[in-house]
Length: 489
Ligand code: NAD
Image: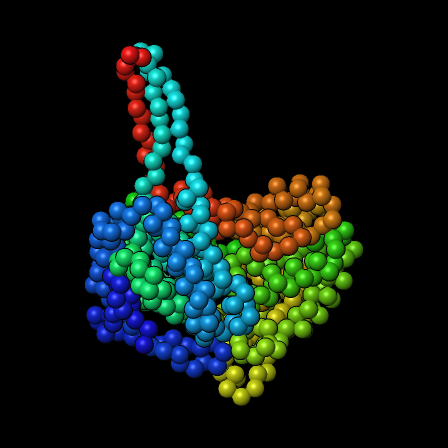
């Protein structure tokens, strides 16, 4: 059974409630998960508060960073365990988890240890009305207990993207992993204990959102900040619920990200980029592309090559080396994605490839499989071209002018990411600057330097994390002003 991790100990939820952790590859039961009660969440928040006042709070920056390096090294050492847990929960290919999810989980601890070690202190000198000088300098204090609420698409990667900087800044955390993917958050507790992170610094409570661990945690008076990654509607619910306590929030939410392909683009680079951005992780990446705008002279070629690339994807078990395409996270999500596949037909679209559920052998028939799908013939304003689907699919729409492409790309309440394919360097700069997104890639996709700002605008979120920007959220700044009243003796 997967247990809660509170105050350095694995614990069953006090209400005795459990739920299923299901493998989306074949619908089989991986494990039962112990749901945290309101009392368990109270205990986790109390443990996190006590840890702030305990050895964690009195550690030097260097000691804290050394521990974070040790966490990263232990994740690396136990990489196979983490990969196995992640692929069982998500069904994603073993190769993807071993190249992306788990190494990035370790990197999130190293990078933020480096960031906090190297951040300079802001200072200003000024003069008081009597002409005497004053020195101002800024101090960073941890916010306190941070609630970390996570989605299921990149479970360890996205959780440690929050936990790494939070701990590096001296906070303690209570994590609520997605109910779909509880395993790697639980496993990380073993790592924390092994390397000697004091008890109560890292806590995990399992459960759902409303009327469960998610809501109990985000409305808890004992937390000092909430960092959330997930759907825009959930983010709005958490902001509403947290308003009473005036809690700072960081919100990484949904997207309906465009890719824009100009006629001068290198089509090999373009198709390689689009194949990843539309289909990787079965399209379940917040930064993924679901709208592709293509300049008319290369439209047919892009549609054809993208459909061919989709045809090369091979669904199969994560451990199958010949397979490179996993299932969706759950039967429920499969139902949502399929409803958009149906809607695409109703809205007048043509599925150039895919459009349904693939024929799978044996027990894989019970998995949440879906076909990679490319549509043409859908209008820019159609629902399929406007709403986040979070599946391996995209709408391809032609354009004539740069202005037209920009108008369509920006015509969305979201503002997370975009990718632009062109060989014209002037256009690349001009177009990237005009896109209303948190991240614009040119001739690539999902190339992330963890020191850079990350986040979205509009319905895609509030705030930026990454590098020093994470410090803005995970620390409280105080200014100290010292007046020099004496003269030279
Ligand atoms: P979700 O919003 O359904 O759930 C996210 C987490 O919130 C889960 O742990 C869930 O239990 C919890 N939750 C749900 N309701 C809650 C409530 N009322 N109070 C407190 N907690 C609650 O999201 P998901 O389906 O797990 O993830 C997919 C979504 O995440 C997509 O919309 C995707 O775009 C988004 N996402 C965004 C980013 C980003 O960086 N912007 C990254 C990854 C995923």
